[in-house]
Image (cartoon, rainbow, N blue to C red; front, side, top):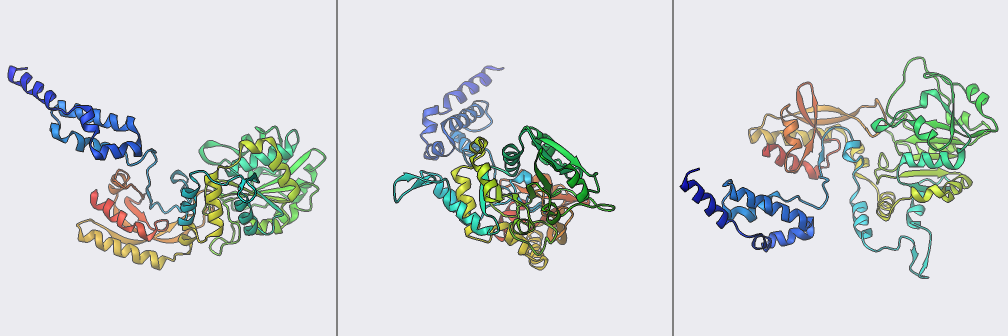
Length: 436
């Protein structure tokens, strides 16, 4: 390096502002309360290093540090779900309603989750949530909530069938997300599986022959993420209820009452009326609430689950309690609104978005689309939707936009499906596309 080059490098280092000077910038002072001092100091140090290397001017250190800071203390990023999968597991399934979000914020501080403010004494946990759930499932004698659907099934298997048998059809030994398999989940509780029937056909006689003194319960699992067609047969709840054993039904997708768009999707009310002793459902699917596992049915069985030692390990926190109660008391949810939106309305939004984007030089076209429920609900059932079609290259670019938009690629095109996108997010889509 020449003498002039060394001199220039030394001058740059001398001109780089000290760390304490940069940290005094009001924007960085505010950022400390938002993302934490270590993150702010790391951003400042990185900006100072860029200034020493000559990549930025010394006076730009504070601006560069501010621009590099994360938006919030959590690494989770809010995204627009334009995939056409209403309950996308990788995107957290059901979005919460405004009422549920408000309830979560209110419950973030000290709250009377287990306190009677009138007497000042300890009381049952989340009684308002329990009352709201009981009102939503009046066919149940009692209800209980744990932290997800799999936890509900584990609690039932542990409390009712540890050291005993669970009778289940071979056609219902499903695999759920991330490689977890139902047989492994159930046998981990100390129960033994008594498989009956075949992959495609199971009859009542198969169950009758298997049920005996060692039976903890009969398990009916809705195949919520696949469809078996052709030469098939299964046994409805009404017939299983004639067996001399409790019937536990895992309905999966979380419908509490029937939905006209999903006539083949089981719901809690109908399943209990058909004779199930316990129903298990997920809160963050078609119910449109937070992640949780809902248990509803016979009071004596629910009591056994609630008082089992494992129930303590699986209980939900105050934020889930608040969100679930608000979801139940203040409908409709974003999920319900999406299912109630017809293709004509979605197509009109797609046309408007496409026109706006074309005016800015983007190759965009409104098209009809078929969406799905997802999240282990209504497999094989298409939902009429509409989308904005963009060149395929936009899919990756939109994932890296300042406000990420998740789309899907079909037939060499990027589809921005609007089924799960609230109208208020249309401007975010325009901003993200034009930023690309």
